[in-house]
Length: 118
Image 1 (cartoon, rainbow, N blue to C red):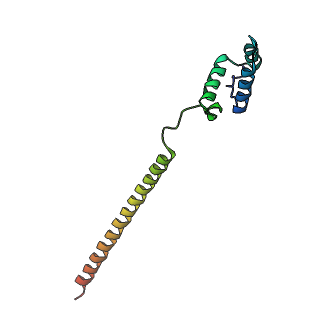
Image 2 (tube, rainbow, N blue to C red):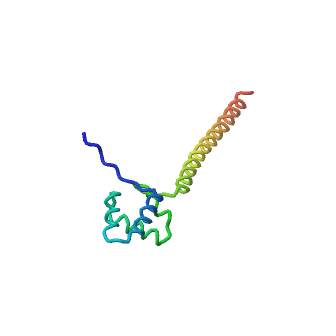
Image 3 (spheres, rainbow, N blue to C red):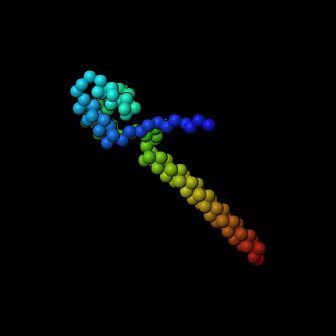
């Protein structure tokens, strides 16, 4: 069984170190040797440099993979609370209906009791 390859994740510290080493290279072929030694591609360097120029230190951190959340956590909480409120309203309406039935039954029994008395 062949092991599934893992995607490499680079820390911001590592990216900064590699960028510093690449910037220190002065002779032709030194950057290529650095990339081969570290097992990196030139596209890594270019994207990391671009992020550094934009001043986005957070951009140097590895990004979370997978589908992005489509809803705001606050929207999820609101939906949950609205669902809970709807349940409570339905429960209250059932209780009120039950109380109404009990009142009608009590008044009917009272009427029957009056009819039986001579």
